[in-house]
Image (cartoon, rainbow, N blue to C red; front, side, top):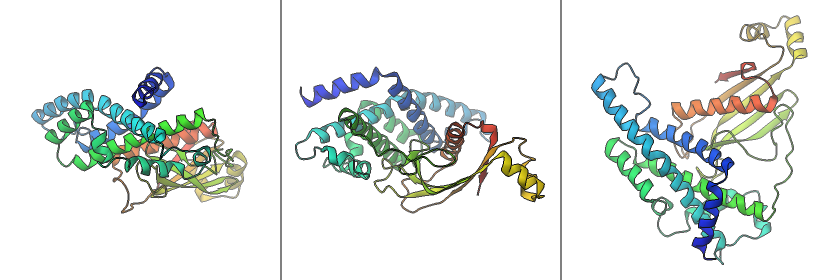
Length: 312
């Protein structure tokens, strides 16, 4: 089979996979929301917007929604195609021992980005992506660099998915996960919060976990560009009762927020780094917080009402 035939076969397999389609659509919605905010399309219901301006924004939003999903999907698949070509090239094939290396993902996205003499952004511009990019540049101010960053990142997510499938075919297994005390998340692996932001554990004690938040290696080739920190405190029934009996001012205040016999406190502190791929604005920040609460609720089997969130 030619490389093109292999690509077409694999894409056919992917788009017939309901789980893959669901995961891809979740990522598309995430990046669509970030782009919509950058284009000013999240302010349509702002009371300061006059009727004429509001109607114009509604029309632009309709066009945006029509174009953005196929554009992002095509960039993902083009990233997959670049990775497939790289992995099948005689000089850049990966052996099994390469695939188990902890830094394989960041090294791979860096290789994908530099594989062609032109930029990855130029290579992934299909008819669908080009139509959306031209629409955005013509209708919205100061969006060019954001478009390049988002579409390049999404293409690299496609390339990482290709790498993941290669590891599955070769039966390459990651190091067995060692769970933390509170959330049972792996202490020895990164884990995703959003399509762009992931975390790793820096402290793991009974009742307390501390995570470092970083950009994933599709957003930046450096796997340790910080986004912030998360501190989790598990308040068990015994802990709560003991603190209340001792007259703890803090615990008495907390009980005004929840009547639960058990809950989790999350303290989130975001940081700004000069080498971040983009600034985290309101929409992405809120998506991050929603995903964070959902993740912790699922991992601890506590309802979201029993997860108390503090922003530092």
